[in-house]
Image (cartoon, rainbow, N blue to C red; front, top):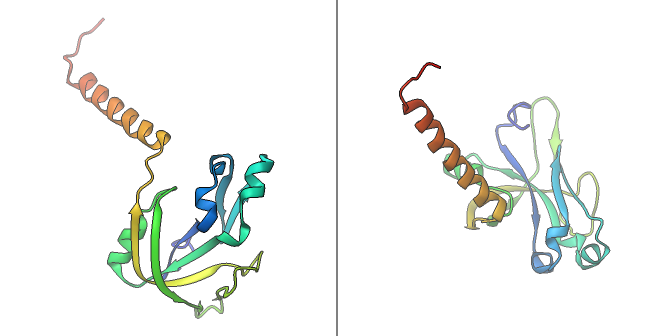
Length: 157
Protein backbone atom coordinates (compact mmCIF):
# COMPACT_ATOMS: atom_id res chain seq x y z
CA UNK A 1 0.00 0.00 0.00
CA UNK A 2 2.69 2.48 0.99
CA UNK A 3 4.93 1.57 -1.92
CA UNK A 4 2.03 2.09 -4.36
CA UNK A 5 1.41 5.54 -2.94
CA UNK A 6 5.14 6.27 -3.23
CA UNK A 7 5.38 6.55 0.56
CA UNK A 8 9.09 6.02 1.09
CA UNK A 9 9.12 6.75 4.82
CA UNK A 10 5.94 4.93 5.85
CA UNK A 11 6.98 1.27 6.02
CA UNK A 12 4.03 -0.46 7.57
CA UNK A 13 0.83 -0.06 9.55
CA UNK A 14 0.85 -2.28 12.62
CA UNK A 15 -2.18 -3.06 14.75
CA UNK A 16 -0.84 -3.37 18.30
CA UNK A 17 -2.37 -4.44 21.61
CA UNK A 18 -0.74 -4.15 25.02
CA UNK A 19 -1.41 -4.22 28.75
CA UNK A 20 -4.34 -6.29 30.00
CA UNK A 21 -5.36 -7.13 26.43
CA UNK A 22 -2.33 -9.38 26.02
CA UNK A 23 -3.45 -11.62 28.88
CA UNK A 24 -7.13 -11.74 27.92
CA UNK A 25 -7.94 -15.48 28.18
CA UNK A 26 -10.41 -15.14 25.30
CA UNK A 27 -8.06 -13.23 22.98
CA UNK A 28 -8.31 -16.07 20.44
CA UNK A 29 -12.03 -15.23 20.10
CA UNK A 30 -11.23 -11.73 18.82
CA UNK A 31 -10.50 -10.98 15.16
CA UNK A 32 -8.06 -8.23 14.16
CA UNK A 33 -7.34 -6.88 10.69
CA UNK A 34 -5.80 -3.86 9.03
CA UNK A 35 -7.52 -1.75 6.42
CA UNK A 36 -6.07 1.26 4.65
CA UNK A 37 -4.58 3.24 7.56
CA UNK A 38 -6.92 1.47 10.03
CA UNK A 39 -6.84 -1.23 12.70
CA UNK A 40 -10.08 -3.14 13.14
CA UNK A 41 -11.32 -5.50 15.83
CA UNK A 42 -14.50 -7.55 16.26
CA UNK A 43 -15.88 -10.55 18.09
CA UNK A 44 -19.17 -12.32 18.65
CA UNK A 45 -18.02 -13.41 22.10
CA UNK A 46 -19.46 -10.99 24.68
CA UNK A 47 -17.09 -12.16 27.43
CA UNK A 48 -14.06 -11.56 25.20
CA UNK A 49 -15.37 -8.10 24.30
CA UNK A 50 -16.05 -7.17 27.94
CA UNK A 51 -12.46 -8.11 28.86
CA UNK A 52 -10.98 -6.15 25.92
CA UNK A 53 -9.84 -2.55 26.52
CA UNK A 54 -10.03 -0.42 23.36
CA UNK A 55 -7.67 2.11 24.99
CA UNK A 56 -4.98 -0.61 24.82
CA UNK A 57 -5.20 -1.00 21.03
CA UNK A 58 -3.60 1.23 18.43
CA UNK A 59 -2.81 1.46 14.77
CA UNK A 60 0.80 2.51 14.38
CA UNK A 61 2.21 3.99 11.18
CA UNK A 62 5.91 3.13 11.30
CA UNK A 63 8.36 5.49 9.61
CA UNK A 64 12.09 5.10 9.10
CA UNK A 65 14.84 6.10 6.73
CA UNK A 66 17.21 3.45 8.18
CA UNK A 67 17.63 0.37 5.95
CA UNK A 68 18.41 -1.98 8.86
CA UNK A 69 15.24 -0.96 10.74
CA UNK A 70 13.19 -1.34 7.56
CA UNK A 71 14.58 -4.88 7.15
CA UNK A 72 13.65 -5.79 10.74
CA UNK A 73 10.12 -4.45 10.29
CA UNK A 74 9.67 -6.52 7.10
CA UNK A 75 10.31 -9.67 9.19
CA UNK A 76 7.28 -8.90 11.40
CA UNK A 77 4.48 -11.47 11.40
CA UNK A 78 1.01 -11.56 12.92
CA UNK A 79 1.15 -12.35 16.63
CA UNK A 80 4.78 -11.34 17.18
CA UNK A 81 5.62 -9.49 20.38
CA UNK A 82 7.50 -6.31 19.51
CA UNK A 83 9.28 -3.39 21.12
CA UNK A 84 9.37 -0.03 19.34
CA UNK A 85 11.19 3.11 20.43
CA UNK A 86 11.02 6.34 18.54
CA UNK A 87 9.30 9.69 18.34
CA UNK A 88 5.74 10.63 17.50
CA UNK A 89 5.85 12.39 14.16
CA UNK A 90 3.87 14.30 11.57
CA UNK A 91 4.90 14.34 7.95
CA UNK A 92 3.76 15.33 4.50
CA UNK A 93 4.75 15.32 0.85
CA UNK A 94 4.99 17.88 -1.93
CA UNK A 95 1.53 16.86 -3.14
CA UNK A 96 -0.02 18.32 -0.01
CA UNK A 97 -0.78 15.03 1.75
CA UNK A 98 -0.26 15.46 5.50
CA UNK A 99 -0.28 12.76 8.20
CA UNK A 100 -0.37 13.60 11.86
CA UNK A 101 -0.30 11.55 15.03
CA UNK A 102 -2.49 10.92 18.01
CA UNK A 103 -1.22 12.08 21.38
CA UNK A 104 -3.94 10.49 23.54
CA UNK A 105 -5.33 7.00 24.14
CA UNK A 106 -8.97 8.11 24.33
CA UNK A 107 -9.45 9.19 20.71
CA UNK A 108 -11.13 6.99 18.08
CA UNK A 109 -11.73 6.97 14.35
CA UNK A 110 -9.74 8.67 11.61
CA UNK A 111 -6.68 10.40 13.04
CA UNK A 112 -6.48 8.23 16.17
CA UNK A 113 -3.33 6.52 14.89
CA UNK A 114 0.16 6.91 16.23
CA UNK A 115 2.73 7.88 13.62
CA UNK A 116 6.13 6.81 14.94
CA UNK A 117 9.54 7.65 13.51
CA UNK A 118 11.31 4.47 14.63
CA UNK A 119 14.72 4.67 16.31
CA UNK A 120 14.78 1.02 17.41
CA UNK A 121 12.64 -1.98 16.45
CA UNK A 122 12.86 -5.44 17.97
CA UNK A 123 10.85 -8.62 17.64
CA UNK A 124 10.98 -9.70 21.28
CA UNK A 125 9.21 -13.02 20.73
CA UNK A 126 8.07 -14.48 17.43
CA UNK A 127 4.59 -16.00 17.43
CA UNK A 128 4.66 -19.76 17.14
CA UNK A 129 1.02 -20.56 16.67
CA UNK A 130 -0.22 -24.00 15.72
CA UNK A 131 -1.27 -22.73 12.27
CA UNK A 132 2.08 -21.11 11.53
CA UNK A 133 3.98 -24.26 12.55
CA UNK A 134 1.54 -26.39 10.52
CA UNK A 135 2.14 -24.21 7.47
CA UNK A 136 5.92 -24.63 7.78
CA UNK A 137 5.49 -28.40 8.16
CA UNK A 138 3.20 -28.55 5.13
CA UNK A 139 5.59 -26.50 2.99
CA UNK A 140 8.49 -28.79 3.93
CA UNK A 141 6.40 -31.88 3.15
CA UNK A 142 5.25 -30.38 -0.16
CA UNK A 143 8.78 -29.30 -1.12
CA UNK A 144 10.28 -32.73 -0.40
CA UNK A 145 7.53 -34.46 -2.38
CA UNK A 146 8.02 -32.07 -5.29
CA UNK A 147 11.75 -32.84 -5.37
CA UNK A 148 11.10 -36.60 -5.19
CA UNK A 149 8.52 -36.32 -7.99
CA UNK A 150 10.95 -34.62 -10.37
CA UNK A 151 13.94 -36.79 -9.41
CA UNK A 152 12.13 -40.04 -10.18
CA UNK A 153 12.92 -41.46 -13.61
CA UNK A 154 10.36 -40.90 -16.33
CA UNK A 155 8.09 -43.92 -16.93
CA UNK A 156 5.69 -43.70 -19.85
CA UNK A 157 2.34 -45.42 -19.33
